[in-house]
Image 1 (cartoon, rainbow, N blue to C red):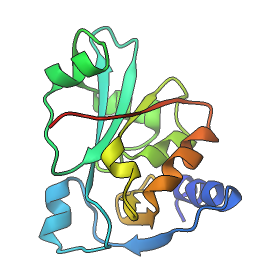
Image 2 (cartoon, rainbow, N blue to C red):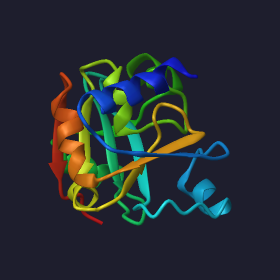
Image 3 (cartoon, rainbow, N blue to C red):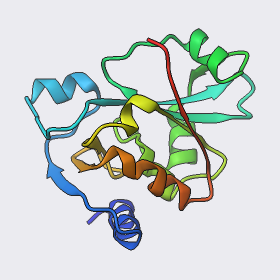
Image 4 (cartoon, rainbow, N blue to C red):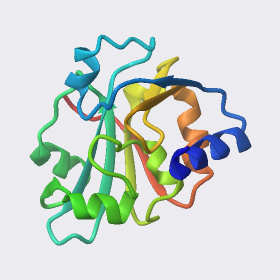
Length: 164
């Protein structure tokens, strides 16, 4: 089993999070989820890994997949001058994953300077699904458990209303 995925399961078990495991073909985008007609009974979530202009701040942003936000607006919400997508190299250096595996669960073993931003519409959902550092698995748990998951880690995180 993937060691990083195993660490996610171990961490969630250690803090008492109940979850379901769903294996599936590799998913790189929200469109892939739809292509395979997967239904875990959970809200669809997109995860973005962004950086500011001078690479002094990195953000892992999770929001419902039906929401749209441009990087300029998100820059203003996060009080940054300019945001852009982080490179593949930054993604691996900071989160230890590759494209398609970005999720809030990367924070269990990531560079602790990454700032996590979660849209409030996610945390009010009964069922949310995230990849546990591998895009061939989705684990589903209660959205209200996200605060418990993130608060046990040495990271900065924010729950925000991200505008459509």
